Amino acid sequence: MKEIISATIAELEPLAEMFDLYRQFYRQQSDISGAQKFLAERISNNDSVIFLAKQPSDYTGFVQCYPLFSSVGMKKLWLLNDLFVKSDYRGKGISKLLIDRCKQLAKDTGAKGLMLETEKSNTIGNQLYPKEGFVLNEGSNFYEWRR
Image (cartoon, rainbow, N blue to C red; front, side):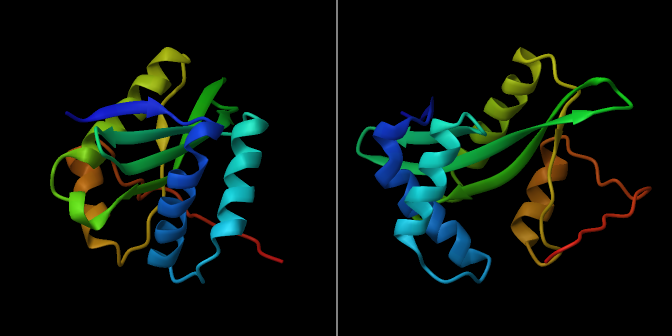
């Protein structure tokens, strides 16, 4: 049985392990202690909403959403920033369950919707998101500034 739960500090250890694997997918060095600190701050400060996919014997994936606001729409907007499923559990519908829970979060909070970004090289994500109702915004340019 697959269950989606809201993450709390009690789930920090398994969440941090998955978060570290997620970061490694994006070519970052492993840093479990940094992951724990980062996630503990997000949870403690209510900076994000994190959902965990859980089976009786294991945590199988997670998704993290950050609140944003649409000035034009005058509503909240959620950034689906992180989505990860452990390799042994991929292809079993867990990503869809996590995305559905994020859609419910948007509905529950009266938000305009969800937005996300993924690398062009993420072939699985780029196939999944349109199937889940996400539309590629080809009318905007995405810019970023880094220091």
